[in-house]
Image 1 (cartoon, rainbow, N blue to C red):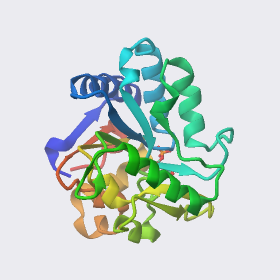
Image 2: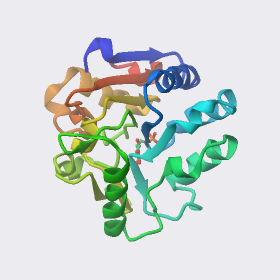
Image 3: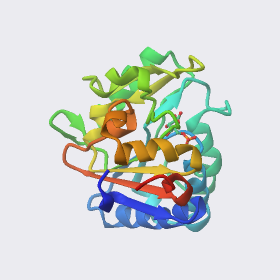
Image 4: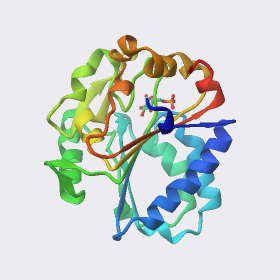
Length: 242
Ligand SMILES: O=C1O[C@H](COP(=O)(O)O)[C@@H](O)[C@H](O)[C@H]1O
């Protein structure tokens, strides 16, 4: 992680507010009529969804944004752990967005079948470079074990898969996930990690200051082929960074 790629905010609320403004300005300034945004699961995006829903409820930019998911838990959309379900509740139900702009991973389907079907959706809709999709923006989180997307430390091979998507298994619970692979993520134009909370501090300091430990962390392997990589973190997550 280079110093210049790191943006530290006083609180998760300040981060969500500032990031929402930045993101919408990137959408506005991007030429063309589609902006392909892939969002992550977990708790961290909740605040961003709420800020977007309240500050940008009436924005016309929702016509341009196509939502994709970095990963999904293989549960129905009504399940509390559904990443789509959370975005639906906190964001989509508050804005006007064409249904065709929402490209969810269908958690209710058989994981292997859905990984293929979601890959086909990506292939059909997203411009490619070097035979990999080029998302305009990918938002990533990081677990306190250093996983990102649903690429866990015991499944590092998913970083090098030649497929756009793969089935992953949550290491502790055994829950099946469908996730974008490392190469599909690394081909994006811009990748932003959003990370908050003291439970992420140790992993962040390893990524920044300890190359040997960082080798074992999926989040540290995210290195865009041509695009930008930025970290947006709060002070609690930043506390051990030297
Ligand atoms: O399991 C997951 O965890 C990470 C981090 O989640 P958070 O709750 O700490 O924000 C998330 O980025 C990933 O997409 C998700 O599926």
